[in-house]
Amino acid sequence: MYDRRLDAVIAAAQTGSFAKTGHRLHISTPAVAKQVNTFEREYGLTLFDRSRSGVQLTKAGREFVEDARMIVRQCEEILRRAQQRGTDGIATVRLGVSILRPGRRILDLWQRDAGKHTDIRLELVSMPDDSEAINDIITHLGENIDLISTAFDTGYWNDTCSTVALDSESLCVAVPRNHTLARRARLTLKDLEGTRIRILKRHRGANDTARDLLEQCPAIDLIDIDRYDLDTFNDCAESGDLLISKPMWAGIHPQLVNVAVDWPEPVIMHYGLLYPLDATPAIRTFISRIAALSGLTGEPRALPHS
Image 1 (cartoon, rainbow, N blue to C red):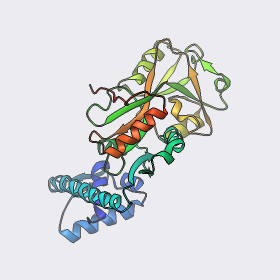
Image 2 (cartoon, rainbow, N blue to C red):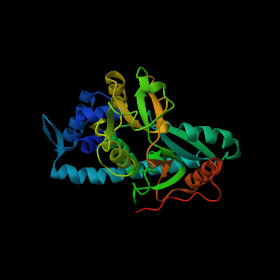
Image 3 (cartoon, helix red, strand yellow):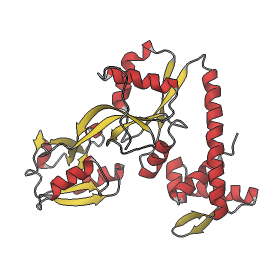
Image 4 (cartoon, rainbow, N blue to C red):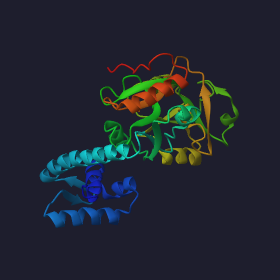
């Protein structure tokens, strides 16, 4: 099997930081540095240029990490096939879960029906919420994680992965519980005047539609954010700022409550599953059953890639 220190090397190449790597791998920064340093010394390699701003792959490091990723994927696939052969024909489907992508709807649906599919075992795999790590996981669906349940815009993932929409939902606003608007059932843009609202920088899709509508109200102060993570929710709870949110995040933070917005035009995202382009039969069977339990008729139709 491959040297486990490769996990630290590959993660450091992706994040450009031993500290971020430690956060991703749930180990300390010194532990990351020790793994990378001892690996380099043991094999006589210089994979990274170090500086106060972080780490950057050397030319040799770039070539090494590219090859190492392939080896890791091959070893994981070998192990996965061996594990499947050792479970008497029971195929494992791995659902990635995190604070912002808890997969509750999928779990509730599968719980109703799991007894009818004893040939499939659903395994929950913990994953981080930082955007770099999530993007990497989605790019490599089918390796460590097979499925992610999340909200997404049509065509956003293009040829990166397949998607199946189980529902559609309108963007809402997360409001601190001590804010007067938190007691409202629905809000209009007029209600939002005089507030500060955090919203993703321009990207594409429903978020940009919401931004266009909010920018038409000069009395609303829009604050750009780069990503969603737990720190963003904590900051809003402490500062009193509102946050453009998704229904799937209801109850994510105890001090914030989601409130629906009567948008002048639809601001809709899909909710569903992301899965590999070359999904296994077990994954496709799982998706078909979840789609049927969600009320979709016939075979689930993947959204077209743009």
